[in-house]
Length: 208
Image 1: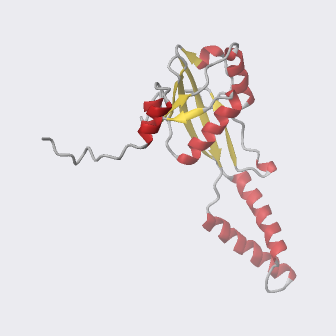
Image 2 (image 1 turned 180 degrees about the vertical axis):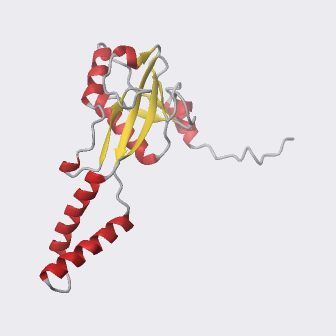
Image 3 (image 1 turned 45 degrees about the horizontal axis):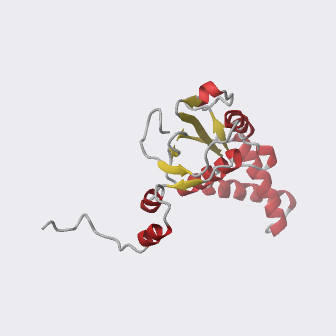
């Protein structure tokens, strides 16, 4: 969702670090290293998050030409997740338990048996499931040091910030009144004074 079409809801970050020499090659290589991969159900995973080409969420083939649009670096974050509804899992579990007890006799399963049965059932359901796919666009103005991420959900934003740091070693600072005010003022006294400001209700203020 986001930069090319769809919602204009995004989170703005200031990029604290500046690109170092040779960053062009590093950027493309790290996009490749942290590219999106299909969910590895056999490894017990139900989620996969990584980079894809903007406008082509199925593509993980990165080149400088499909990433850089002067002065922007443009990529997308793809997040696949398999969700098994709790009601579905409970229904299948009840059925499996009933069949097992009928075969061997007895009135109930112990904790270990239920865990083994549940793990086996989850694996089977995940193999059959179609993952929920979400794509979030990223546009980084390397000249201004401003990055926009087309999401506001705290969970996905946290995952995005962590992936950016792991990929490129960059620290992102979410835009806020404080970060905006102190971005261009490197004065401790000014920063301290901003923190001591009292909130004002501009919407309800009366004009003299």
